[in-house]
Image (cartoon, rainbow, N blue to C red):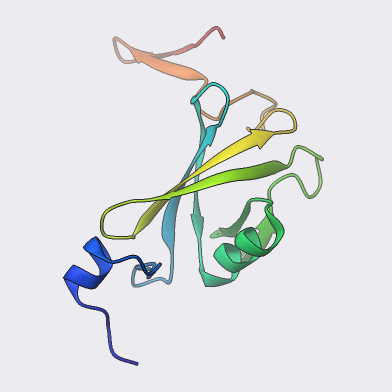
Length: 125
Protein backbone atom coordinates (compact mmCIF):
# COMPACT_ATOMS: atom_id res chain seq x y z
CA UNK A 1 0.00 0.00 0.00
CA UNK A 2 1.27 3.45 -0.90
CA UNK A 3 2.14 5.74 2.00
CA UNK A 4 0.10 8.95 2.28
CA UNK A 5 1.86 12.18 1.43
CA UNK A 6 2.80 14.67 4.12
CA UNK A 7 0.07 16.98 2.82
CA UNK A 8 -2.58 14.22 2.91
CA UNK A 9 -1.65 13.33 6.50
CA UNK A 10 -1.33 16.91 7.80
CA UNK A 11 -4.06 18.74 5.89
CA UNK A 12 -6.45 16.06 4.67
CA UNK A 13 -9.70 14.85 6.20
CA UNK A 14 -8.80 11.15 6.17
CA UNK A 15 -7.70 9.54 9.43
CA UNK A 16 -4.27 8.09 8.61
CA UNK A 17 -2.66 7.24 11.96
CA UNK A 18 1.13 7.20 11.81
CA UNK A 19 2.40 4.37 13.98
CA UNK A 20 6.07 4.31 14.98
CA UNK A 21 8.57 1.57 14.10
CA UNK A 22 7.09 -0.55 16.92
CA UNK A 23 3.56 -0.13 15.56
CA UNK A 24 2.53 2.30 18.33
CA UNK A 25 1.23 5.83 18.69
CA UNK A 26 1.04 7.93 21.84
CA UNK A 27 -2.33 8.44 23.50
CA UNK A 28 -2.81 11.18 26.09
CA UNK A 29 -5.94 10.73 28.19
CA UNK A 30 -7.73 13.74 29.63
CA UNK A 31 -10.84 14.16 31.73
CA UNK A 32 -13.42 15.70 29.41
CA UNK A 33 -15.03 17.67 32.27
CA UNK A 34 -11.91 19.09 33.94
CA UNK A 35 -9.38 18.84 31.07
CA UNK A 36 -6.88 17.35 33.57
CA UNK A 37 -4.31 14.96 32.10
CA UNK A 38 -5.08 11.52 33.50
CA UNK A 39 -2.55 9.22 31.84
CA UNK A 40 -0.33 8.59 28.83
CA UNK A 41 -0.28 5.21 27.13
CA UNK A 42 0.37 3.61 23.76
CA UNK A 43 -1.99 2.25 21.16
CA UNK A 44 -1.39 -0.14 18.31
CA UNK A 45 -3.86 -0.66 15.46
CA UNK A 46 -5.79 -3.28 17.47
CA UNK A 47 -6.18 -0.95 20.48
CA UNK A 48 -7.18 1.98 18.30
CA UNK A 49 -9.76 -0.07 16.44
CA UNK A 50 -11.19 -1.50 19.70
CA UNK A 51 -11.42 2.00 21.18
CA UNK A 52 -13.25 3.39 18.16
CA UNK A 53 -15.58 0.38 17.97
CA UNK A 54 -16.53 0.19 21.67
CA UNK A 55 -16.16 3.77 22.89
CA UNK A 56 -14.02 2.45 25.77
CA UNK A 57 -10.29 3.17 25.97
CA UNK A 58 -8.06 0.27 24.96
CA UNK A 59 -4.27 0.33 24.90
CA UNK A 60 -1.30 -1.82 24.00
CA UNK A 61 0.57 -3.07 27.04
CA UNK A 62 4.25 -2.91 26.17
CA UNK A 63 5.19 -4.97 29.25
CA UNK A 64 2.67 -7.74 28.52
CA UNK A 65 2.77 -7.37 24.74
CA UNK A 66 -1.00 -7.45 24.37
CA UNK A 67 -4.23 -5.49 24.16
CA UNK A 68 -5.87 -4.30 27.38
CA UNK A 69 -9.00 -2.36 28.10
CA UNK A 70 -8.50 0.29 30.78
CA UNK A 71 -10.46 -0.82 33.84
CA UNK A 72 -10.91 -4.43 32.72
CA UNK A 73 -9.96 -5.67 36.19
CA UNK A 74 -10.62 -2.59 38.40
CA UNK A 75 -13.85 -1.42 36.78
CA UNK A 76 -12.34 2.05 36.38
CA UNK A 77 -13.07 2.27 32.67
CA UNK A 78 -12.56 5.31 30.50
CA UNK A 79 -15.54 6.21 28.29
CA UNK A 80 -14.16 8.00 25.25
CA UNK A 81 -16.17 11.10 24.42
CA UNK A 82 -13.85 12.71 21.86
CA UNK A 83 -10.68 11.82 19.98
CA UNK A 84 -8.34 14.63 18.97
CA UNK A 85 -5.61 13.90 16.42
CA UNK A 86 -2.34 15.86 16.23
CA UNK A 87 -1.05 17.47 13.03
CA UNK A 88 1.01 14.54 11.74
CA UNK A 89 -1.33 11.89 13.20
CA UNK A 90 1.27 10.16 15.39
CA UNK A 91 -0.38 11.09 18.69
CA UNK A 92 -3.96 11.40 19.90
CA UNK A 93 -5.80 12.83 22.85
CA UNK A 94 -8.65 10.77 24.25
CA UNK A 95 -11.06 13.03 26.08
CA UNK A 96 -12.75 10.66 28.48
CA UNK A 97 -15.26 10.31 31.24
CA UNK A 98 -13.45 8.27 33.91
CA UNK A 99 -15.44 5.78 36.01
CA UNK A 100 -13.05 6.07 38.94
CA UNK A 101 -9.36 6.59 39.58
CA UNK A 102 -7.24 6.35 36.44
CA UNK A 103 -3.87 5.43 37.97
CA UNK A 104 -3.14 1.86 39.06
CA UNK A 105 -1.98 3.35 42.40
CA UNK A 106 -5.53 4.52 43.09
CA UNK A 107 -4.75 8.16 42.33
CA UNK A 108 -7.24 10.10 40.23
CA UNK A 109 -4.48 10.79 37.67
CA UNK A 110 -1.14 9.15 36.97
CA UNK A 111 0.31 12.66 37.29
CA UNK A 112 -0.11 12.97 41.05
CA UNK A 113 3.43 14.18 41.85
CA UNK A 114 5.29 17.39 41.08
CA UNK A 115 9.09 17.72 40.90
CA UNK A 116 10.21 20.41 43.35
CA UNK A 117 13.91 21.00 43.91
CA UNK A 118 14.80 17.48 42.79
CA UNK A 119 12.20 15.86 45.08
CA UNK A 120 8.80 14.43 44.16
CA UNK A 121 5.92 15.91 46.14
CA UNK A 122 2.31 14.76 45.98
CA UNK A 123 -0.06 17.13 44.26
CA UNK A 124 -3.18 17.81 46.31
CA UNK A 125 -6.31 17.74 44.15
